[in-house]
Amino acid sequence: MLVNSSFVLAYLKYSKIVGLSIIIMAALAIVAMLSFFEVALSLDSQELSSYFVSNRSDYYLALSAWVGILICDVLASWGFLKIYHGLNSSLGRITAQLRFTYSAILLFAMVPLFGALSLDAKEIESGLVFQYLHQFERLWSLGLIVFGLHLGGLAWLNPHSSKFYGFLKIMLFLGAIGYLLIHGLSHNFSYFATWELPMTHLFMAPMILGEVGLAFVLWLKPQAYLRALEHINSTG
Image 1 (tube, rainbow, N blue to C red):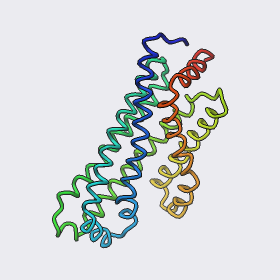
Image 2 (cartoon, rainbow, N blue to C red):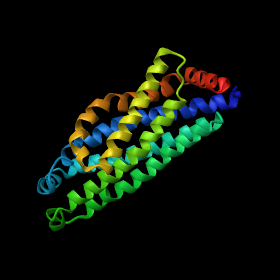
Image 3 (cartoon, rainbow, N blue to C red):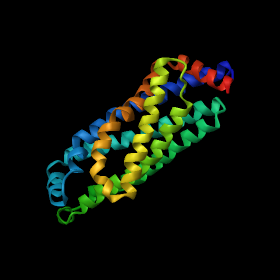
């Protein structure tokens, strides 16, 4: 399918928005996890209450990072929708809508994080912080199942006209499988807890490389990627 010049100009804009949004989102995710959440989610209720009180500034930083992640996710979803609408790809539009769904779940999941800001000393000591943070974790994990479906859609749509694009396609597929297995099983099988960490380590590289690799392509090489996408659409 050949696209007109006006779409090409729009595509270049949307590709850069998607690419930069995902790259910034990945950086913010590192900030959110390393500044507070990586340690906090590993603590028991009493330890977390003390950690929360003594690291409030880190919590504010991490929460701000989550807000930034949400904004970037919405921008990436919108950009993907514009791109695949212009390419007249039904699967592409569904894939973009899945990311919008993930963004909505993330927004809902973040509500308890803001609730933790209003807790007084007595409520913090009672373990409400632990409850709020793990509510966020459970809801976010559900959202990551949807995100895995989104990655699977991107993998299916991704061209394989070169070795690099083929590698990217494999990474996106493996990343999708990783999200679906880790977060799908953790919500349905309690005994999976012993396998969760090893599987996270196993799939960590493709879960990161697939999406971030695609982001850099969309940011730095949007025209080459469009030509590859056009080839797929034209050959059907």
